[in-house]
Length: 451
Image 1 (cartoon, rainbow, N blue to C red):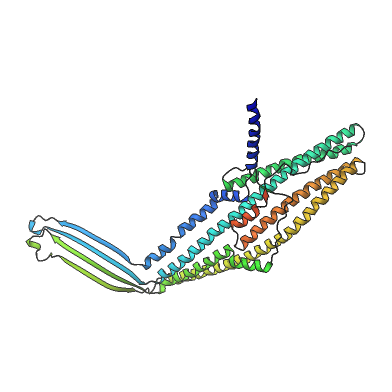
Image 2 (cartoon, rainbow, N blue to C red):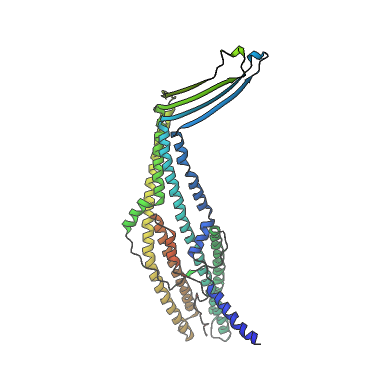
């Protein structure tokens, strides 16, 4: 008996500790899972690693090219006097003194490496936005399910109350039909909301590679820090630092160097070549004594070549490269305009989003108050059932709108940072701090209406 008395407090303490220790995953947790799993990010990083060799490959023709060769030949004649064994060893080195396309390709490779780095950084930014987008889709879909379930329960209660009132003559058949219609629609909305939640979880699992069943949420009472934004400043930052813009700048540089590569068909090439050759003979007899004697040779020289005519191919290749450069510069201009547009859109989304949060928070308060008044009015006969059901629907919608506006402000701020090329995981941590574990008190408890 005494043993049980001791065990009960211990069990209660353990249960309390377990409950306290549990925490639903937040933005940073999901981001860390996605970084380890996401295929797009892995592809971008692997491509960058591969492109790091591009510069070394392009530099190789500028450095000395060293080759060695050797031979061992035994000549076996039917006359012993003419038997001979020849051993030869050679060493050759070639150094390019001037070859126009080699230098152009080396410069081009450095631009390609920088472009690849920007592509990887873009992928690292993009996964932050994709994680936040998928995360808030789940949270909002869960909110939709919660609201739909609460509305369905309230409508069911209202329908049952209407039927009971009609049986004693305190409600009309129309009241019952209105309540039943509202209840049927709310069931349909709940099924749709649940399906949307399942799809949102599937999309999140594609990013993380793991099933997640519950996420931290933004409380409807959360007040996000206000942010004063200067449209021109953000637009300028986007034009200069947007990662797509930087990629296109390097693409234009690569295209420019390609013109120089193709122009090499008009330039001469100069190479320095040196070689050493050692030849020795053995097993020679009197028949070869005078002809086969050991010897070695050393040679060094400068060789030049000049292309004179290639059938017009060089001219066409240069023209093609120039057209590709024009296309790259047009792509750069489009990237800058798109980055500028994205910055303007996201600045306005943040500004209007902050105003919308304030408006939706006021709408929640006013709809809560109106619902309370409508319920009281219905109890004393001053409001009909349709007005109460409409008030409840508006209250649910106001809460859903507030949740969505909070999510959209956070997402718009992240997208604005991405447009300016300054989005990092630190920004994600900032918003992760305002999230909290979901609770069962997401919606207010609604008292059934007394007829």
